[in-house]
Length: 168
Image (cartoon, rainbow, N blue to C red; front, side, top):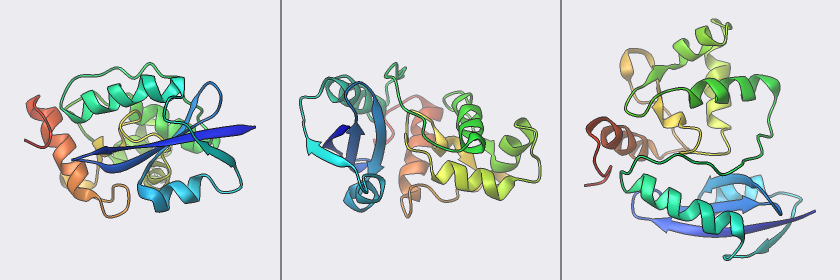
């Protein structure tokens, strides 16, 4: 199977690399290093005009510019059953709200799996679409987001909570 990629730069998020197969988005990566990890052993060709990318990039841009966006793009959720369960629960968090890792663990009926919820969140292949930036630590503390990009998490949350562009 052939996979296609493109990259998109946004002032808030930096370089985003998008990976798709013929019909579906496979992942969104922060930066080239993260992208290289995700594309390992795949036959990958650059294609900026791929239909999946021409649909998702305007939505990503609108979202990162503070607009309310529904992401209708079909995504491939490759992950363990536990990861998919966590991602599904994270997807239920409304815009402008947060949940703790503990609350996610309790919601999926695995209250002792707080660290595993954190790991599943970190493995999220679709930042923004599955809004893992809405998951926070105890007492609302901001914890890991896409490596060292905690400032992006903070700006996204502020932007969602006040209904404005996140980086104004």
